[in-house]
Amino acid sequence: MAKNTVLVVDDERDILELIRYNLEKEDFHVRTVGTGEDALRLAREIEPDLIILDIMLSGINGTEVCKRLKAAGETRNIPVLMLTAKSASSDVVNGLELGADDYVTKPFIPSVLLARVRAVLRRAERSERESAAPARIRVHDILIDVSRHEVSAGDTPVPLSATEFAILEFLARNPGWVFSRNRIIDAVRGEDYPVTERSVDVQILGLRKKLGDHGKHIETVRGVGYRLAGET
Image (cartoon, rainbow, N blue to C red; front, side, top):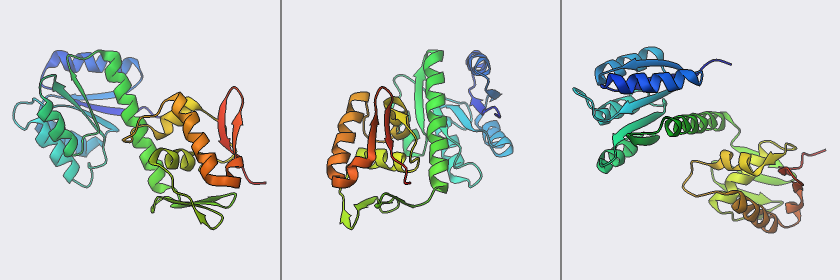
């Protein structure tokens, strides 16, 4: 498997080296630059899998860099993780509104930064898969229209919450496969709703009830998790 390439942008050499060391230790390929101008140039040149971007840069600041990245066709889909001072909440808001994917405040714990990096990359990979995936899924006469965010069982519309819809879509894209509660959480994480192991059980219960007779196809695999039974 190819290494993920991360472009790190910060004008503090100590910070660059700290991030480089911790990322390379986890088998990431790392490129570093100290200015916004170099960040824009190198992002276009190498198209990294992720950019870690400090907001407080001399010259073109990080907010402007993020704005230009998201406005350019060749770089708009590159995930951006912002580094910002703990007190700079307005920078965080501006960056997120411009399209940044997440942020970490300075000073940061390397393990926390690594966790955020992996989470952003997982979301980006999932988004890429979903954009190429079919917009309509049918399993056991359950029809999921992803673009319309609608579900029907037989000929009956089934109103679902955002969480229920996300879980059902995930299971339906992988019929017959068993997924742990944690894997289901990972699949729907990153949206505007919280998901915990206990809430997965609650959502599955709600799904079965709303799907009526079709709910029996969502099976519990004792000691493992859940699956949507494949059609035979």
